Image 1 (cartoon, rainbow, N blue to C red):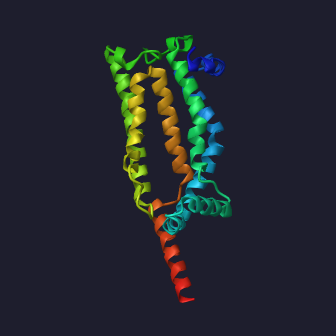
Image 2: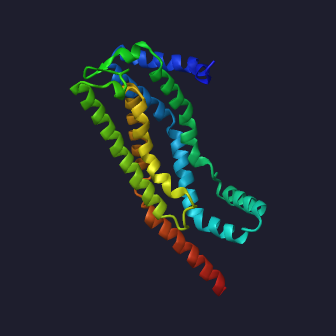
Image 3: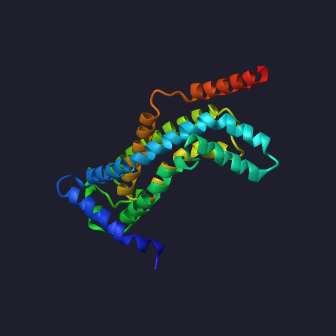
Length: 244
């Protein structure tokens, strides 16, 4: 028995929800709306993650200082780091909550779109939702997949730019091997190549939601300026201690 079959009850619920919407709307639009509805339910976790990211950015110089102070005592470093986060009422894992919460949903949707069912027989501009990119041959099929992949690539580029700006704004050098992280933004477009059209629509919707959500939650903030201000406050605090 495949591990995916354990998710069949949840897949059935997702199918019924999309089918209920598809009774009144085009199935492709039903997929988009269902994805958006689930992401809306997960929005409180995204807000918590955004707060956690702001706390980590503010604490980055102090965490770096702890790392230098206790670099020979890993156990003491863990305790001091945990104490620092407790004093701020934050968690170092808050930023992982949205991703972890989306994994079950992603797996359910993957199962839904890769298992034959009536939803995949519906069409978008005449192209079946169950059609795979490798099976697209006609002009309309190729044009639709090209448009979807171009949109995913554009979203990947936006995510890449944001990730690069965030890394450049960090007051401490990035850890070895993390330089590749921004390029992971293009992974969604690559993964869409192995999914049918319905799966690509899901990825397009959830990726666009993620970027829009992050832009809204971080509106009015400049990562570079914020990090610079944090460093300036840290330097001023150290000078004050030296003069006292």
